[in-house]
Image 1 (cartoon, rainbow, N blue to C red):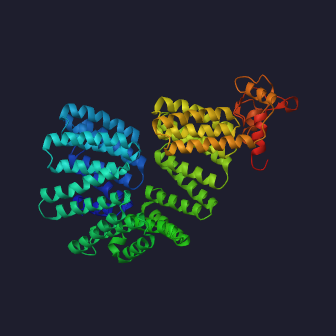
Image 2 (image 1 turned 90 degrees about the vertical axis):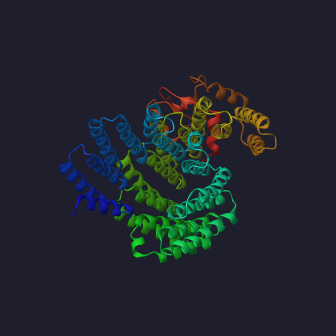
Length: 600
């Protein structure tokens, strides 16, 4: 078999999702081309890049990225054309995005974009591709506004270069519509998709390209209709796609099968659960042996079916299907492949939802361990799975373990993305809530006070996350029986909401209800005497002049005995050597909070 034939066979295995079979074939191809063509031949360099991509496809992210780095170094040493050198560097930046190193990938592509625009011009097709890559990375990592702004700017340049009717302009509009849909701006996405159908009809001649484009746009339009709760239009569009694909391509064509899967998904999205289940079951029974060999595609269909079984109350069937999918993907793709681990994560969720929290924890811990090994503790996929694991511990009532995991998670997130990243700020708010759930409202207050100070530096005052954290602090103060601070902060938030959103806004109404609940709570709790309250207030800053004894969490007792700084239930920071409790009066706030805790 020639090297070209082997490369073709590897490509066939790749398209079938048999990634583990691709690697040895491409290794032989790369070795053969190096021997016969030499290190600097374009075909040798291409074979090395394809082998690096194959490792990434197979889930061996670090190995694939290392091979990409070696390929980049070899290519730079050989290539003398600055433009070609720029292109191979761009390929490495794209590889960083593929393995989830989003920050590094975006940073590299932004540098390349600046230099490339100077060398090639702002409207060069490669420059536009780089801009699309960066925009897509923004959207996928929750920075939709930045991604949309970049796509809108790119579209303006395309229109200036080619005019409204050009195919590249249509492509730019469709990418922008996808970003709009991803950001929940379904109305704007629908307008673009509907206009694009007319443009495609006028711009493209009849043929396979036009048919494929129409089917793709119609499918995206159906999804946008569903997102906008235009149920009738969504269902009608999806059903017509299936009918048209069957008429033009036949029942067994890949595009027809894909449209049937899309139709089943939209039925489920629109609440037609029984019909969606029937559609997925019929699709699976109609798959040919060749289609069944594509384990990743079939696994996606079966996972969607399993989720619908849960919605329909058929939990046992859902878990059975998820187990089968995880086992099959593990056998075919490998135990540490991202799709295998994603399937195991779905199975863990299923265990939690069906009242098996310990099985959920065991399964998700296996996922986290595999991701730590393959990707590192601070990789975004690992961080996401670790957060899910914390939720499973909380659902099982294991709050102390959840807290230690959450604290480590926040530290690693801060290290990976920085203190100003919105996801870091969001996680810190969730950590504060975990403190409250564990009966440590004082720690929640300390975390939220520091968090709001950072929010003020990194977020707009009307940002939803900033507002959420402020309301959490209002509640945390109340849990600590610091009612004056709670009510003062809540009233300030209400004044701002009335002025900016209106007195009848949902936020203002929620704040009024919240403040009323806090006042009612204050009237019910056992209030400390005036003298006790003065002592507690005096102990709130710096050293404890009143010499009060404070309550701390069980998990902090040993640290306190060692003289480490810990936070009491009331929020007071205790430091220095612990004193003999027999010689101290009890902090009134700590006592009242402790008495209110379950089991006290």
